[in-house]
Image (cartoon, rainbow, N blue to C red):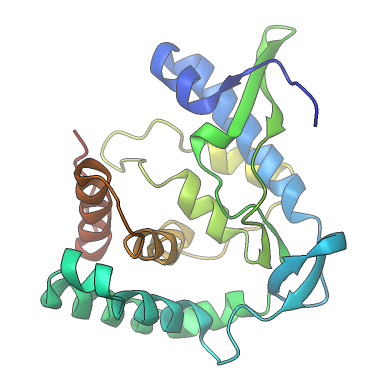
Length: 225
C-alpha cells in the first residue's frame, strides 16, 4: 500500500475546463492500452499470482449467458420489466458473433474502470494518470470491457471524453474493432445487469442503472439527473 497524490477523474471532471479534461482523457486512453499489454494464456478469473484460475463461465458465449443469469435473478426481475429483460437478452444474443471475437482475447482487464478509480496529477503543465485504484474485480478478457465502463456516461450528441480517450488508446498501441463504440456499450450491459442483482440498492442508483440500461437498448444517450 502506498499513498499517491492526485485527483480522481470524477473530481477533475467536475471542476476542470474542456482542455484539461481532454488531456486527462488522452492519458487515460494511454494507460488503458498499457494495462492491456499484460496478457494471459486464456481468458478467465484471476487468482493469486495474477494467474487465470477458472473460466469466466464453463459454457460458451459467456457474456450473453451471464447477462441472462443476471436477468433471471429475483432482484433483476423486480427492478426490470419483463419486456425490458427480453430486449436486453435479445440485444446481447444479437451481438453473439462479435462477442465470439472477444472471447479469445486474454488481456488484463481492470473490471471496474470508472472515473473514481483513476487518479491524475498535473505534471509539467499536463494532466496525466498517476494511479489506477481498486483491482479486486480484475479478470483476463477483452479491453472493451474497461472501455465500455469508462465511456458509460459519454454522450454522442455532445462528447466530452471522445475522441481524446480513443486517440490516446490507439497511439499507445491499443486496437479497436469496427463499430467499437456500440460493441463496448452493449458489452457494458454485463456490468450494469450484474449491479441490478445486488441487494439493498438505494432508489437513486437503481434509477440511474435502469436509465443506462434503457438507453443502451434504445441506442440513445442516457439522461442522468
